[in-house]
Image (cartoon, rainbow, N blue to C red):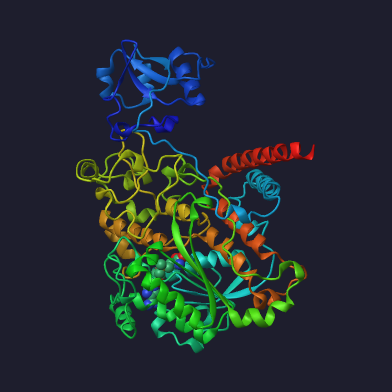
Length: 609
Ligand SMILES: C[S@@+](CC[C@H](N)C(=O)[O-])C[C@H]1O[C@@H](n2cnc3c(N)ncnc32)[C@H](O)[C@@H]1O
């Protein structure tokens, strides 16, 4: 209730004990609330019975004080509380508590020194253009503004091959830049299905089929492509495991409820998952694309005292590439802090022979990781709105999966099925050392990294949760929220069923365990993915370094690819927000960049004198 009235609840509020921790205010007992002008206005009108009353003294923090506080446990809503005789509003200086996470603003811009000239002005123009589009969509009742209406995308074409494709995080970015996928490999059928549902597979071999196990792929079957991309499995290098690195012989990362035996038998042809990387080297050696972009966890840098990374970099250089690597966080372009290691390679022969074809303005130097702005996105920009929380399809959960879940009393809503059970909440509060309220996805905070185990052991405090209005326990992110957090737009279709079971079987089961298996699979696929916005910016900068790609693109104008990547990335980032929040974020950004521009003008003015 408190949250729905824009008041920030404390730990005890989310535990449903919102009446038990009270403050003494002028000899009365007060329930501290953080103020918000609208809430204040509303409360004052309820208390005074006068709709037009306004809150006075709004500069201070707000307390609701009741002389009958002992009765508060029975109150089910703030409205009831407000109507209780003896309840009044008291304005007082806030008492700072370490229980409310203080959100320190910090700048997550990557390589600010490489910021393009007049970036603030260009950003303002860009944001205003999108703002007008959003308004037009609202007026014409179009579902939402999305990339298909893109301002940055103009036709052009380069080709790419996506290994370990997953649900296609790379593909989303490369398609936004005008690329066409000519080969993709992914062993896991549900991921392949999502890939097919969302990306253009028309140019894939055999009428659009995604190859399975990479060990079984013959390089001769991979068509020529300009860029190779792939996020090779990270379990051998992840700090969440014991980092066996390249020596990891495990055949396949265990899937929830296992994976088809036939898949495992196929993988036995080759090595374990620590050696899957060798397959990238093989394809690079045989196909010689102009460039590649690989992604993995930063833990790779420290695995085996750095020897794993050295081996990887050396083997990539040995097949003819100049290799650069850097850890970048997605924090600036998504609402999530997700640090990942990106490895970029540019084919050397291509550079030597073809750079002369570049025009003088865009002659390539050596690859540098590009500038990425900080859009200051936060949890509230991607979390469900109240309205969405009444709609299973908005949360991307097939209703037939949940309709028979009856253990929760009351209305069946996404909140009720995603919130922690009493047992999980008890485990979290009393047995988990990691749990503290500051770990919740508070509206003003950025979200912690979503990994492939998200939502599996919630009681242990391993997964970030969303605070829910008392008396509800906190809840997990829905799959749609996870997709937004990763930077996928709402038009990105998520899965509807699993491989091994038919949809009918799900429907018949319709119980908690079927639902759990389904959403864990969704979390796993999304937690494994890459953030498309970050990829778009990096790939733009890669293409700018590849004469062979730039020259092969049939385009009248000389495209500034670094610029193109940057704007495509920003656009993907904005497209992944909760549609209902886009307008607010645009206004916030427009205000921010307007101020930036003005302060820059002021800073320059005295020098002119
Ligand atoms: C880190 S994820 C990559 C996710 C992807 N970049 C995305 O955006 O969704 C690694 C992927 O490699 C796949 N994989 C593992 N072993 C494989 C193999 N032998 N052949 C093909 N794909 C494999 C996994 O199923 C998983 O989806």
